[in-house]
Amino acid sequence: MATQPYSPSRPCRLADVAHWDLETDVIVVGFGAAGASAAIEAAGCGARVTLFEVASGSGGTSAMAGGDIYLGGNGGTRVQRAAGYEDSTEDFYRYMLLAGGPDADAERVRLYADRALEHFAWLEAQGVPYRNSHIPGKVQAPGTGDCLIWSGSEEAWPFNLEAKPCPRGHLPEAVGEAGGKKLLDALAARVHAQGVEVHFDARVLALVADDARRVHGVVVRRDGRPCSARARRGVILCAGGFALNQEMLRRHAPLALRLRGDSLSGGHDDGSGIEMGQSVGGAAIHMDELFTTLSIYPPESHAKGILVNERGQRFINEDAYPGRIGVYCTRQIGDRIFLLVDNALFGQPAPYARIEVAAVGESWEEIERELGLVEGTLVETVRRYNQHAAKGEDPLFHKHPKWLKALDEPPFGALACHVGQAFYPYFTLGGLSTRPSGEVLTPERAVIPGLYAAGRTCCGLPRWAEGYSSGMSLGDCTFFGRLAGRAAARAALLPEG
Image 1 (tube, helix red, strand yellow):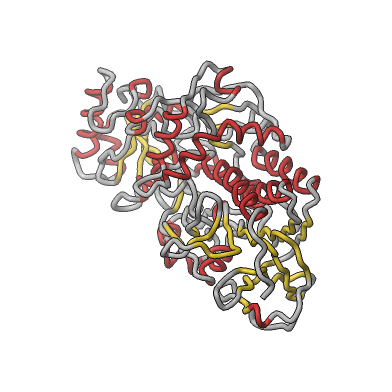
Image 2 (cartoon, helix red, strand yellow):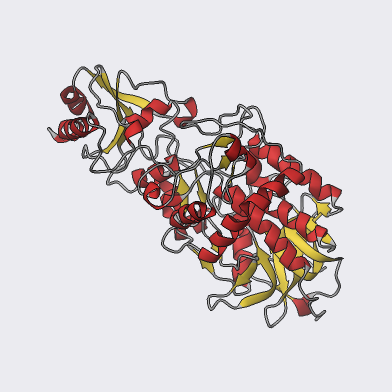
């Protein structure tokens, strides 16, 4: 194929392809959780599948994650039931719908809620191991090999008003922070067992489309030269988000520029998949939504402390999921955020959290002066909080009673959770607009023939940072990656030209 300046933001014209270097039924771009799941299902439908991965191995950003997948409904998974929880589909659906925010995709949420138990069985069938064990309380990626955790804001206001709380984070059996790798290793083994043709160190440069913007294949750089690859039934973009694309972040999600560059990425979330979809008329939605988190626990006792901004004011119930807390921290005026604790609650923050002690004192007046806050502001906040917490109440922010404690045991401390200083990792939630079955849509919601997307390349289940729960991304990637794989494999053959 003749060398020319290919770009993900501009499709290669079908008429300019003299010949195809490779022909297949379905092309999958990206070998993370979404791409692996799509390839497995497409091959299982009898399609010939070719997978291109820019890195030298499988995994993507998914392999860096804790590995938990958000699952439940239909009475609960075997792990939930063994722990004594009965999770109704309607509670699961309502929680997910609320977590999806003002523009939650009700059709997508309903599909996931109804079929989550089947998806759990599918994951186990691929060789992903899960223990029948539960860790109560507040933990994040415990690395003990145990399975069930509270991975969201299920017990926290306002979510607990809409749906009966239930733990739904399901971690693979893996010791250490290797849950994501365990998940991806199992899926990768299945991809290879299915006979999928995999090409590593292969960067997809552009889509190939005709004048009607039907997608016929891709231009991919292999062995240092561009090659043309035809997909007779469809191309599935599973190339991740845009957390590493500074220009896209500046344009769509400038909050990332305040967060010290701590992107959660396997190294290739450059936005190229989204750009390729847009190049043939695909709509990109919720591009401003950026997940971030603040790990105020472990230790879990810190959830009984209170967070204040540099005006000395509370702004959230501290028992919420750390991702929701992180989003609210970034919305405060100024970058200084403090977690207030007393002697009974203080524990050394995890080193990765970059949370340091900002002040220690024998009274809250002393803490207030040391932090340089306006006189009386922090003192009054603590006084009112203690007054209600002593009675098991939080009328302002509705923290659950089990996380309420008056901060009345000196010495007292303020921990610095400052934006731009503490660890606020992030990834993007916006992406291509798709049907639940993966077809990429135009702004008018017309289907672009031959083009599908899954994972963070599209905007799926998690589309509102305030409602995110750990496990939603991997749940979304694997479940809707499967649907995209099946849809592409069963699509009618595209015309040759």
